[in-house]
Image (cartoon, rainbow, N blue to C red; front, side, top):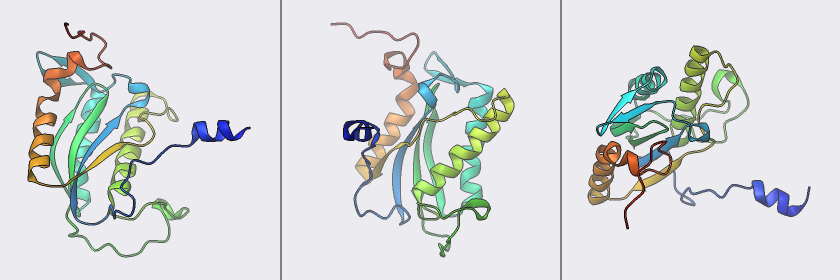
Length: 185
């Protein structure tokens, strides 16, 4: 394997260097299905109709704020092949120090009660439930990683909330929409 081969597989982090993702703050996240396959539902007349897999994702997203007291969830939308949401880390839970990961396994490479920890747990739980339902115990359900943006002020928060609310209305223009409408020149 050459250096070029190694560099080809190196993923550049989009995280803010030095930023503590366990500190209180608001984040805009996008999580995409593996291969951006439209497994979560369909959009008709500007409304999302969730598939059974989309219902699982919806249930687990809502449940996350119940089982993780350090989180608040604001606006979110589940699209056919991705989820957009605003996650607020409140810092209300005692963080503590954990040296092992879930189930007493190897140490985590992410801070407990951080955005990364939440996303990893959410993706793991939804993948397990969806794969059980579709009889594919080891199939990937989500793409590796996720997109996040630290929300810096109220204007940013409002702009992102509007984007989330209006996302189903622009689905037919999305490059991943199977029935994509091409913009007119």
